[in-house]
Length: 110
Image 1 (tube, helix red, strand yellow):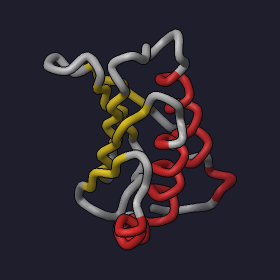
Image 2 (cartoon, helix red, strand yellow; image 1 turned 120 degrees about the vertical axis):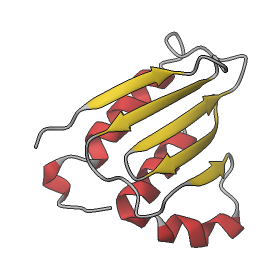
Image 3 (cartoon, rainbow, N blue to C red; image 1 turned 135 degrees about the vertical axis):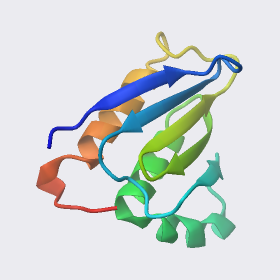
Image 4 (cartoon, rainbow, N blue to C red; image 1 turned 30 degrees about the horizontal axis):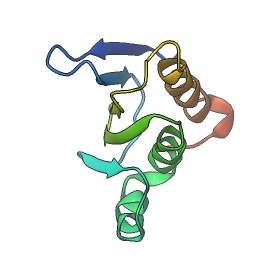
């Protein structure tokens, strides 16, 4: 199965986008992570599985990203108000991270 990603803009919050995928990226129903990742979040990072953990860590490392909510088939990303999705390359970087960590050559499962 080839990866499909659909990006939804929030109608209520222009600083939030939902990236929906057709492969499982998390083993947990839903969990929120804020930047920076705190020590107490390590337990939850383990619960979401390796793919989810890597996606969360890399997305939160993007300058401008404040928080993420990861679910089995999507990740919501909230950026800071002073950042722009396009000119700051946030959306493209999130897409690249999703493509990379869901690639078949990784042989990973959520």
